[in-house]
Length: 235
Image (cartoon, rainbow, N blue to C red; front, side, top):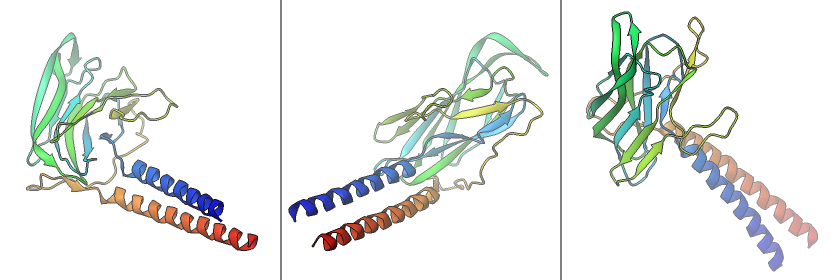
C-alpha cells in the first residue's frame, strides 16, 4: 500500500513539475525587435519591446547597441511618455556615402531612462532608421535591461542557425534583398499611452500560460484516474 501511494505521489509530482516548467517558459518573454524583418536599403521603424519579467521590481533603463560594423546613417527615436532617450554616436573608421553626402559618424547606442515598466507590463521603444545596410543579412541589437533592484539583464547572446535559442537572446532584425517582401510583419500591438509610464499589460502571455495550466491539470486528473483504476484492479 505504501509503495502504491509513493508511486502515485511521484507520478503526480512529475506532472506538476512539468506544469511549472511549462508555465515558466511561456510566461518568460524577451526583449525583441519588431518587425523581425525588413528590406536592405530601406527605411523602417523598429520597435524594441521590453517586458518586465520580475514580480518585485520595475524596469527603469534600457540600453540598445546599434552595430557599428554595419552603420546606419539616419537614426531617430520616438518620444515615449515618461522616458528620456539619449543618443551616443561613434566616429566611423570608413565613412558611408548617402544621397545627402558622406556620413562620418553614426549612432552606436541609445539609452532610455526616467520611466518605469511595472511588473506584468511592457513598453515599446520605437526607432526610425535607415537606409538599412546592404552588406549583411541581419542586424543584432544587443540590449541591457536595468531594474530598480539593481539587477541588469544582458540581452546579448546569439546562436548559429539551427541551434537552440540562448537564455538571453539579443534582438535581431533580419534583412532581405531589396524588392522582396519581408516574410514577417509586425504584430498589431497596443502601446502605453500618455500618462501611463508603467507600460502596457502583457495579459496575452498570461492567457496562454493559464490555458496550458488547465491542460496540465487535466493531465494530472487523468494520471490520478489511471492510478486509482489500477489500484482497484489489483485489489
